[in-house]
Image 1: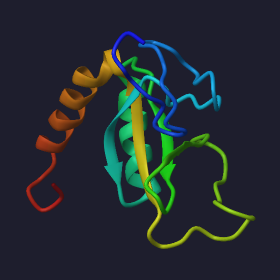
Image 2: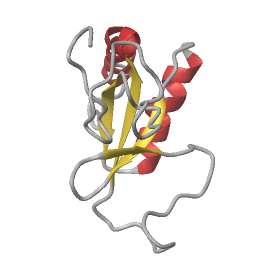
Image 3: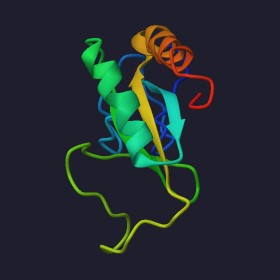
Amino acid sequence: MDNGDSCPTCGEPVAAGTRPCPSCGSPLAGARPVAVEATREEALLALRLLESAGLHPTLAYLDDSGVPHAIVPDEPFTSGAGLLLPVTTVFAVYVPESETDESKEILEDARRSLPEADA
């Protein structure tokens, strides 16, 4: 492996730039989290902002163990056997490693532009 990287979903080693994970198929292989949000709406806002900048974000939810699982942003989402989401479900936005710095800058600029009470 080029950098000793591993898939955030299954933990198997993956070579730099490899997507999806050859072991589990996760599109999060080679990606880094740039936003972790308490609600899906907040994560979707970050995702849409990064998409509008021409980047390639992926939405994920974190299971009870903190393991990320990619989800389709525009489809209804339930974890488990069709049950409602637990109140504690956390969502994250991942981007390819090569887009990490730019994504963080875009999101930080967006946060700075919010009024103090909203930031």
